[in-house]
Image (cartoon, rainbow, N blue to C red; front, top):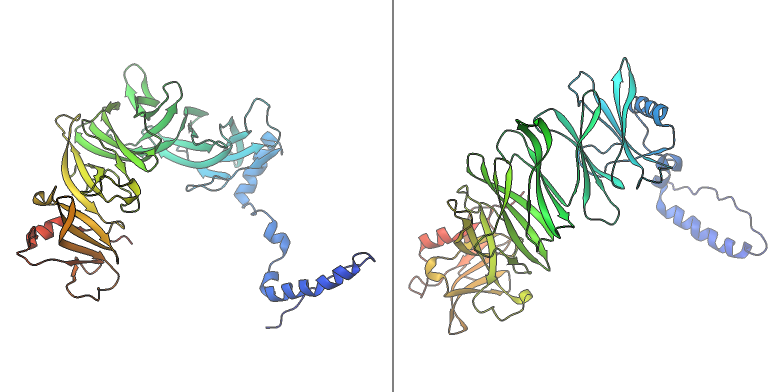
Length: 454
């Protein structure tokens, strides 16, 4: 393919002529190496903003007619709706409404950023601005629409510069645009907490007055004294050492009664689980009689509260050093994972259900049989091999099981593939009469291969 070099028009003066003349061949060479593909599209087209569709142009014209041209369109950063023009049917009529997000170029001095939303409705064949509202925050993070039980609501999340919390505004539109609820949050999830067929918002917000995080349950309610309304249902103060929420998991106890498991970070690779009781939209913090703290290092994967055995009950992971590792620093320790289960008759108490070792890459879970507990520990060796070893008189003794994860079968003798065809787990067992050797049934009930994720 013939490569062409654009003609370079220049004029050399007496001072810089020599330097420019030396540079021109080099510039031409660089342009030549870039290939002709670099000039397939004109520069003007590459720098111009996306062109508006016919509908967007009509909406934009109606917007400027209402607010003037002193505005900058704002794009939501995440979620399903990434355009400044968000079309959605909010009032149940045949046509959509349009929410347009923009920033005033010369905002009022009393406003923080000039961030606003303008709502337009399609009336008599044309778009008409029906409402314009200021928004808290510096940028639009996400726009979404949900039916919490009384029609479509628009949720707008906005971020602040240099702050971890996000502003939330929940709006509805029928004859007018109404803001139903406004707050800030560091964590948000949607969950049908009370099992009524509609989701509620679960929010966590730091309360400076309490110097603690607080959980809020927000949604639609039917109350005799207030009728149907959307807003705060209940709240509960959370653990004082909570730095950030990682995940929320729900478990049904009985009709209208749920347990909420909040996995959270304490900082410095230490995590815990906060338990909340939710009965008929009322949140209550639960202080357990067991420590749910867990540490992490390079020898253990990230773990959350989950129904690890599929019995419908959530188990909480808690870690402690394996036998022989108690005196080492945290980065050096091998950690066992105790899984705690809540007593449903008394949600203030928990008991240990399993003691496990979990492989670093979460390829397998080993459930320690009762007769191994307090006698067997683990040692990591090369080739992703873990030896389960007797610990006697403060020393590592006989190996009673070896487990290896590998893409290919080990070359050494004695290794057997374990699990289905997708498994990467291989085992080596001692003689059947060796001390603490597992029977085939014990091995099958103790070693669980985690299904590989696509």
